Length: 251
Image 1 (spheres, helix red, strand yellow):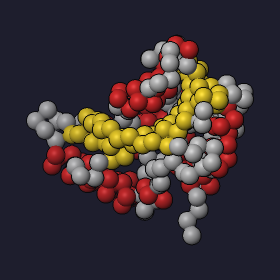
Image 2: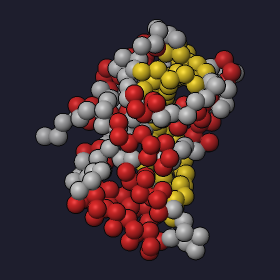
Image 3: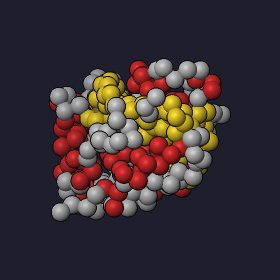
Image 4: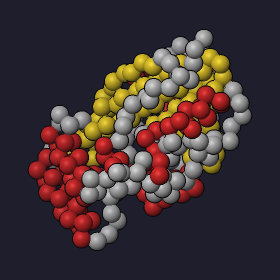
C-alpha cells in the first residue's frame, strides 16, 4: 500500500528545485484569482494566508491586487528564492502549524500543494486561523491531457518518475464538517517554453531525478518531443486546466 503523500517528506523534497520552480513553473489564470476573491469586499482590507506558498507565485498574485498576504512555506530554500513583494510577508510554517493567530485571516489559499498535507489536521488549522466569515480556496494546475504535446510531456514525467504517487494525486476538496459547502470552477492557462524552459519545467518536479541514466534519457526524450512540436519561433505550449475549489465558512 502506498504511503500518503504527507508522509513522503514534503517539507524537504523541493529544496534542490527552487531555481527551476521560480523560472519555469506556470502562474495561475487571472480569472481564477478573481473568482477566489469574489464577494470578499475591499481587497486592501483583506488578509490572505497562502499556505505552502513555495516561491510565492500565487502569493504575489494576491499582493498585486492589494491584499495583505502571509506566505507560509516550510522549505527555507524555496522561501529564499521567492521574489519580494510589498504586500507579501514570507514566514516559515506548515499547513498543519501555520504559526498564525486564531481568526486572523479572511482567506486561506493552497495552490498546487494540498495533496502534500495531512488533510484532517490542515483543515482544522485553516478553520482555526480563518475569521468567522472566512473562505478557503484549493487550486491546482493540471496538465490538459486533451492537448497532444502536453499529454506526451506528461507521459514522459510518468515514465521518469517510476509512477510516483504524486502523479495520481487527489485534486479535490475533501468532505469535512468544518467546510460543508464547496463550489468548484475550471479555468485554462497556457505556458510558453523554449527547450531550456521545457527542461526546467520538468526538473522542477520533485519526483524527477537530477542525474543518472534516467535523467539523461529524459533530456533526450524532451529534446525529441520539443523538435517534433516547436513552432517556427522555437516555442512549445504546455496547456493546463486550473481547478479551483472554494469553501466558505457557514454564516
